[in-house]
Length: 82
Length: 248
Image 1: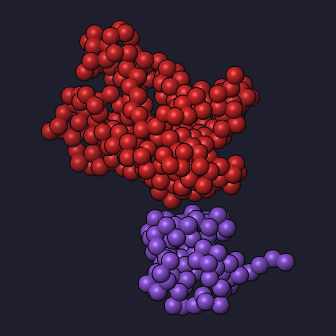
Image 2 (image 1 turned 60 degrees about the horizontal axis):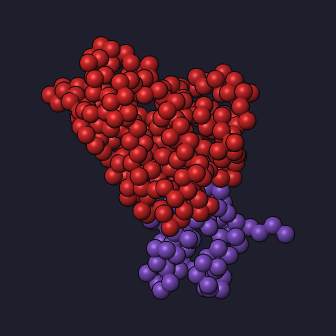
Image 3 (image 1 turned 135 degrees about the vertical axis):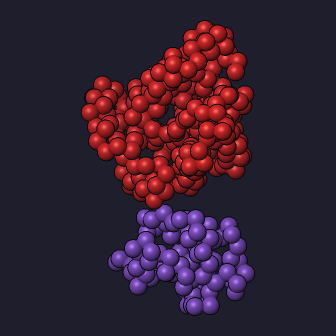
């Protein structure tokens, strides 16, 4: 069965941060998640890029700092997370 | 023996001169060469002919290296078509000859855009893909004038000095991912463009070349083949002069 883009997006977060998908919400960001460092962020972005076949601009890699912002960044590359 | 058999390579600035020779040498060694130029269709016949003549193939890829988005899209196309990229040759560049008072700031900035910003943009994008592969070779085009200096070439020498600095730092940062970054620093090369300038402006400089002749573009391409191949698997961070013992 094909996963929705939201399910795929969530599964990447869950794998990178080793959390349950239920924990992903609007407060899931670099300020609130202890494990969220630059290495984790780069790994997160690389996974998103490979999965959705896009390549983010440097400013978007730097800006990918929360679960919600990530969705809007991917939307810029025509990836609708829903 | 095909030193670059099935290696996926992107070579910029292949419509003439050294870049054209590099693309031809790579194709001869069995590579899949994505040959870049700005002007649409200008490489089509040449690429078709080369692909028929060699084991490797040549695929024209038209974009302006100063258009950062176009460059990214081009690299993404290579990734989509080939699944990887093994070699980047940052060859495209511009050169002018003028004394310091005659250097127009607009030209100076344009040269930086082409020779440095364009090259760095591609290195940044391509190295991200190479990092996933844990392999790759990036070859930048420097120049003897960056190290030795040359009258009437302050703009060009400045950009090539930046390329040398870029090469050394990128090599250190990318080495853990098995990505090699080197630069080639040619002396005077007998490209059509250079020969015209040489004959008109400084033909006496032939006496400055120990070997008494200009380099053939093929000789620069041969060095690039070596750096692109697994024969140079432990060579990184090097600026390799290829100048026939030239004194400036």
